[in-house]
View: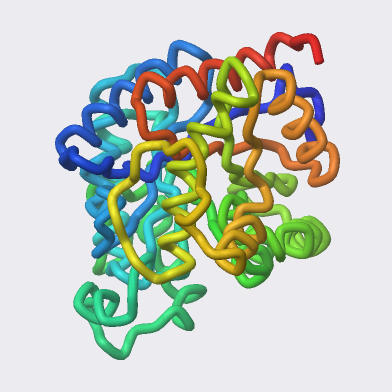
Amino acid sequence: MNTNLAELPLSILELAAIREGHTPTDTFQHSLTLAQHAEQWGYHRFWLAEHHNMASIASSATAVLIGHIAGGTSTIRVGSGGIMLPNHAPLIVAEQFGTLASLYPGRIDLGLGRAPGTDQMTAHALRRDLQGSVNDFPQNVQELLTYLSAENRGSRVRAIPGEGLDIPVWLLGSSTFSAQLAAYLGLPFAFASHFAPSQLQAALHLYRENFRPSEYLAEPYAAACVNVIAADTNEQAERLATSFYQLATNIVRGTSRPLQPPVESMAGLWSDMEEESVRMMMAYAFIGSQAKVRKQVEQFVQVTGVNELLVVSHVYDPAARLRSYELLMQALRQPVAV
């Protein structure tokens, strides 16, 4: 547990949002620019998510994007937040991340998720075996760990490259299932509290109480992801956040649109019920000036006791998004007046 904000590892979860009026090519360039700045500012990791068949998110080929980001940076850790394992053969994942770890030694993380990261029809189109399901996740994780182990060198099926490399494997989750599995396997765990806040505390408790030391980790190590939008003033941050609110409203509606520009007011853009749903889903959204965001983050870390904080910022303007991440790092490392 680390409640000292000056020492708390701070990392980024990049969803590679496609902005209205722009292309995935633009998105990938802005992702790289963000990673390069994050490296300079002292962020610890830069993780990319896996989503499919979504007009708002370009990170479908996650391993390819990780290579793009790692190739354009030098020291920041780069990884998946996460690879949705039901969509992939464990051997393929081991080979892909073995290749990445061989190209960028000591910098690659492999975060694994249990959900498909898409709708049911697309999930069926992705899978190697239509009989496969999320229920196979524990077995698939253990199969993947076997391929990455040095002990697998005598097997008839081997991951080359991948075998014997030091690739930290994380389990990611939005419920208690992966928390319990991470505890059982002795792996680090990251919770998706940026969109599924309700089971955060229960998951962290189960993970810590049931953790078994392993060859991977001696003590439990938990991270949590939150939404942060920081600006020079509270008013500026609230206006920037309207892009985030519009994106979240579309999630509630089950629709997918590119990230929209900010608006002066959300009045008329969501119903009272939609607003309530968005605010419940985004309970851990810290929006405001440096001082306000620092206070919110400090309270979150004290209550949860997380070892590391992952941050996602849905901001339409690339320059304002960079500023948000810069202000957050400054706020945590250099206390500002409240």
